[in-house]
Image (tube, rainbow, N blue to C red; front, side, top):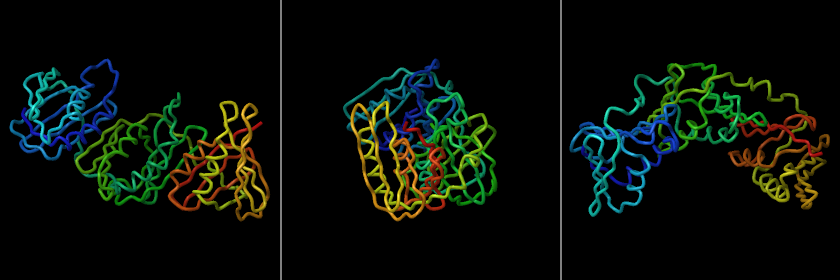
Length: 367
């Protein structure tokens, strides 16, 4: 194999590909990437056997077709530090050479033909979504997935298609985020009851593409999802298990409804949480007539209070929340105002922004 790469384009490709390369694995070949050169293009693949990326590199000149399997971190380091506009990558058997104008690196890798197969996108899409829409939806729910849990189903994001909308739902048991995404077309899937896509895969989808007007094609096979956008195909196994029946968690009978400024509440939560500690992590919302008071009390540290005027004539209520969980949600609210719905002090609070974003947050006991 002998291929001339545009260094900047190769660096961009490796930035995405190395995000799936495992740092530790009993299979050393998984710490490598596969470069396959055809007559006119080069395809670069990486996988950890659960998630795979197939990247068709742009701005290449293929002198000799072939295959190379080369260390991902070593190649990335060379490309990152290089000062050349063009790098020549050539290989024979298990040896790969990277040449610049004044440099020559030799990397001993693996024999061609040994790399696991990384799926490509073939056939028609089940659904198509604008990249900007999908990435906006991912931003509004991914943060709520469980980081570590014995319930594997909540380590991913639920995908459901209802009424030409893709519902993305994530929860860690203490909060739940749901985002609705407009589907451009669904020729193969008018309705999907639910698949669970791993959080790692969702994070990858946030990184693909350079133009938010690009269209994402999605194909759902048995126990696997394929997502194609521009020159990238992401393939992933799905999370097994049953996602919680999230509709049952969303309160529908709250009688206290407040319309609040997103920026003002985010600032108030951030300031009132400055004196929280390991022992007292919560802040108190005291809702009264035309006033909302944010406060925290840490016996070993001190007190904090932030007052905010608002239009409210309903029943007063005091309720405690985790400030970090509040800030996580408010940072992804796309509207200037949002609705906060409350019931009793021991019932979850609900944040709504327009018709597409909903967030359910369990209260905490402030003692």
